[in-house]
Amino acid sequence: MMNSMTPITTVAIAVPLEAEFVDQIRAVDPSVTVLYEPDLLPPERYPADHAGDPAFQRTAEQEERYWDMLNSAQVLYGFPNESPSGLARVAVENGHLQWVHAMAAGAGGAVKASGLDQEVLQKFKVTTSAGVHALPLAEFATMGILNGFKRTAELVRDQEAKAWPALRTPTRLASGSRLVIAGLGEIGLETARLARALGMQVSGTKRTLEPLEGIAEVAGNEALPRLLATADAVVNTLPGTPYTENLFNRDVFAAMKPGTVFVNVGRGTVVDEEALLEALDNGQVSYACLDVFAVEPLPHDSPLWSHPKVLVSPHTSALSAAENRLIAERFCSNLRTFLDGGELPHLVDTVHFY
Image 1 (cartoon, rainbow, N blue to C red):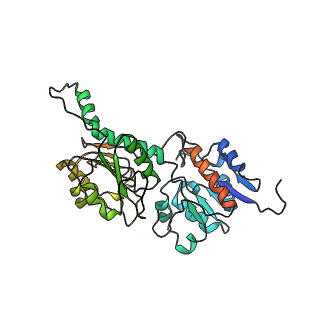
Image 2 (cartoon, rainbow, N blue to C red):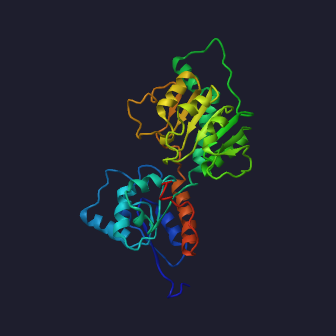
Image 3 (tube, rainbow, N blue to C red):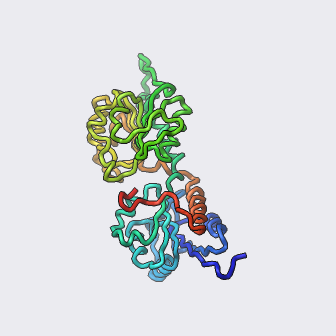
């Protein structure tokens, strides 16, 4: 039974979430009060639609209730209105805000876009849902590698043309090939696990250099040209920061072994898209599977849309029907840590914003 002196921690649900997962949050501890008013939240258009239907509008009374709810909580599940401006407003108006949990794995960009200064950002913590998306992203990256090795883009074109080539073209084996992963975090390590199951040898980059089980070599990003010289495929999982912007530039693409398969499930700003197009046209890159882009949505006039060696995915590879459940479970675990006074995992770095 809760002691009468136990402080109440108030959690406000700021984004669409099923009632069953709200109940899981309530069950973490009897000292937790969860504020949840589904009529104030936009309906989801698909599983894990954290922003909800853009056509949804609150009445003036509902809008006031929504912000009163958020401003009375110490903890928020989601950014208000799932937007940087919402985060900026609640950070200023809510004087006892302690922690905001973001739905995204890469929430640093949204925190930066809020425009909050360091003094305000130091008053509360922001955690991400990093790790929740690791498996779907790793599966997508593996699909991209296999698409490139097995020539699926060419097969689709032949099928559309009802063409049965007189000369059969061999495919490439994943087993025995070399994969380089830029960014050996949770997504990168899950990708490495799947790649090793296919018999691939995996090396990669990491800010903190340390041996990792099953990884042939761990190096810094400055070693990419050397690693890529013998790689058959490369997967980028790196976040968008000033240190990773255009990391994959002309020099890095030129260092690749001709015919390299390139997959990007990190951030679009890590790749110089003009340099990638040149690498596709000159054969350094044989196939590119891209889920993220420098500008999103990808502009209609981008040559990537129609390039025969490119698969364009509209930044959806992390989505799965299980996402809301997985994020809620991650939040419940973090909430237990928060209540116990522990160190929250996956904090947004408010200097580098990742």
